[in-house]
Amino acid sequence: MSVAVVVNLRAGKGSERVHRLASRHLPQARHVATRDIQELGRFIEDHLAPNPPGVLLSGGGDGTAIRLLDELCARNLELPVLGLLPLGTGNAWAHAVGAPAATKALRRFAEHASAGLPTQRFSLVSVEGRLTPFAGTGWDADIVADYRAQLEATPGPLQPMLKGLRGYWLSLATRTTPKQLFGTRPRVRLINLGEPALYVTARGQVRPLPDGEAGKVLYEGPYGVVGAGTSPTIGFGFQALHLARKVPGRMHVRVYAPGVLEALTKIPALRRGQHPLKHSHDYLLTQCRLEYDRPVPLEIGGDVVGLREQVSFEVAQQTVDVLDWSRLS
Image 1 (spheres, rainbow, N blue to C red):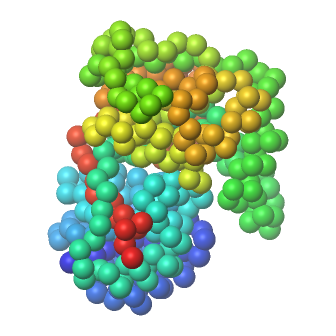
Image 2 (cartoon, one colour):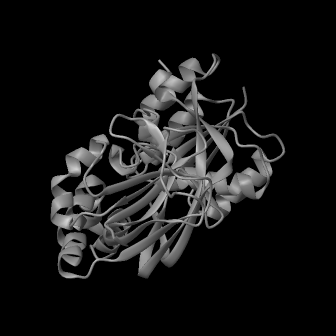
């Protein structure tokens, strides 16, 4: 089995050590440690395109994995089995497949690489020409944007103290929440553009949504979070898109619309994917468009890509097999 390993040295969490361990545990694999997209592109062009690997280990966060998908698809290469080595901040996709710490994952992979590897097949969301397991707007995108701004405003020696979950909570408390409390809430219109919408009952049964055909407005009003995904988790293991794998070929599109103070009390319920949840409007769709009353931050796979007044999500034709660490023992 042909294996390639990409480690993003800017991802943090011991990425240089992981690169050294990968070289030692998998000496026959093709390896690269990158700091920018140009290095990654050259590695794919020179070393992977002529002989695509069967398994590609992605050492980084969700952004690293998504960038790999971008680069492979740009060259019309078949997507290999993707093995996620969590080195990023939220590591949402890695959480969804039970990935252990990157160093432990590497050792486990080296022990079992010669045997059959368990995988999960994921559909992907296409947004602005990119493939991702999740994307959205709202508090999560605001928190990411505020978190980045907080790091940039912090003197260099103090930045390690504000990275990771601690920094996200601080950003939520000091930046995002005050803006939500004292500002006017944004509004969104969700329009179905694909197959008739489905919803999930309180007992977990999938049903057609009345009046949910293409062209219908499924929701219009204020919101806190709008997310779409084919993987149930967002950052830090939150099961925010808990219905994402309920129906193959569908994405979970969620509009969560409580006030910010009520939402803060529901964080445990959001984390475990409680369903149903008051003020949560949940749909299983193939394609949709979101229209906002003002420019709002859009995040794709945990990275904020800018402000948008309109964005479309669609279940992509491509699927990807992802190494299921929870069954690799």
